Image (cartoon, rainbow, N blue to C red; front, side, top):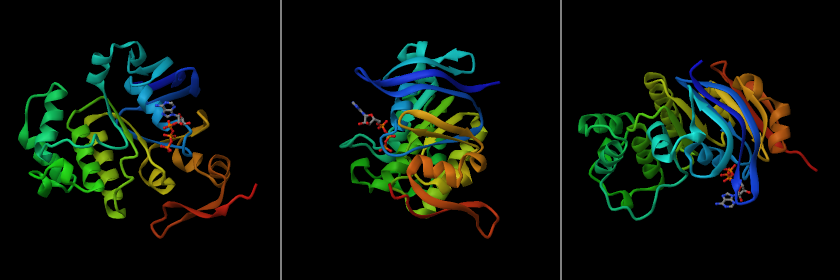
Length: 255
Ligand SMILES: Nc1ncnc2c1ncn2[C@@H]1O[C@H](COP(=O)(O)OP(=O)(O)OP(=O)(O)O)[C@@H](O)[C@H]1O
């Protein structure tokens, strides 16, 4: 099956192991997987390891290729990683920056495509604005445009919704899902909102202290028991008026 499979992956910094022997069966192409887990559990470390930015051992098969054995330049042709925040002080206009990302990915310059993507994300009106004069949320949307223009096989998004208002969080996840489907990418997204995972993910991965707690269908993996175990909170899964599952947190489990 085409997609991403992770086998016995370990990653960390210096001698410190953060991701410990992680094995995950196939994340399919065309689907969005949400990576959940508490602060410091290793979500960014995992994404960075897949992108080749951290020391890692084990295997990460993207279709028939083990990403960990690919030279960085070859890996960059297949994998795009959007970090939690864009570099500061870049004095480029928004449209220009998206075209720079497009060219850096090896694609032909296609301004119409870049403008269409800005329109899809609802930021075409910012095309001529400078990056260093945008709000945090606007910068995050531009980062997404820069990532999506690259047409990777594996798209890694580290908390792409953290600065966005409620409306944009839903809109962006819809765009990410649609682009993932149309381009047949494997998309792995870190979010902290469990309800976003329930609504938008085809699959979720739950980590705690660098280890896999569970992975699979969100409706199965996300339960009162699992979020008590992973986050230490009391809660329940209810149904909203549209019949969709919704997590309600009642409080913290006292130790
Ligand atoms: N560059 C680094 N050097 C050394 N240790 C690091 C480095 N980056 C992160 N760590 C450590 O690795 C662990 C996992 O960090 P990571 O950023 O992967 O967590 P996370 O799950 O993404 O957290 P959050 O939800 O808070 O963003 C933490 O204990 C952190 O202190």
